[in-house]
Length: 211
Image (cartoon, rainbow, N blue to C red; front, side, top):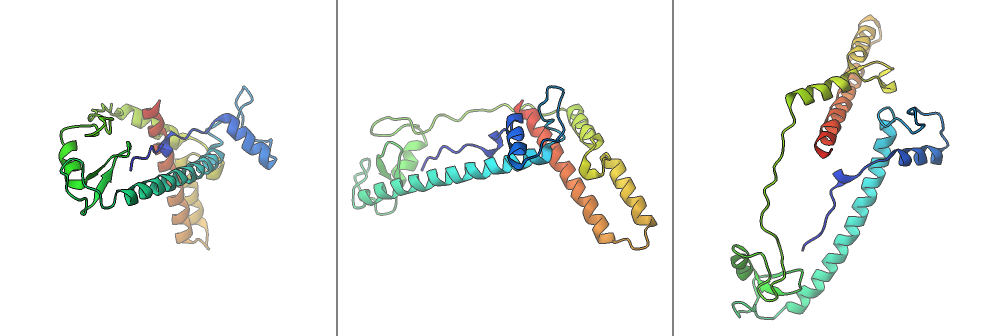
């Protein structure tokens, strides 16, 4: 079954969607750029919420499409039971393949045919194109270093308005000077922020490849 899936990585969150999200929850006091639109970097938490909402909606849409295509394929499969393969003229008792053009063949003939051809043996409709070579330009070490450094130096409210280094340093000082320090809580807080930092770096690397 051929399903035209759309990658979730193609989801884009726009500044207009961020404005609409804040308006929906009644918030007007958020970080904005000089043009009055929200700063996407400092409003990253909201961007992630909108991204997840759009991702879930896309998954639901694709799931419905998949269910519909499976139903259609099931009806075609039932109608082909007991038929002979149009290539070898043998009963299709060991399984069958159904192409998008609705023509049905036994598994053995399908494998043999598509080793050398990309179209339907009967109507010649293209089923799959020839393999394409995709050239991927690797990201340079300098670009990675810039991305990592920018994210490490960025100040977030979740880091108590510190960059990553000073957030960890301040937490370590507070942990050392407190008589009631919880080592597990301290480790979880630091590890959680490092995970967020990793996600931010990965997101920027993805943006580099897409743009």
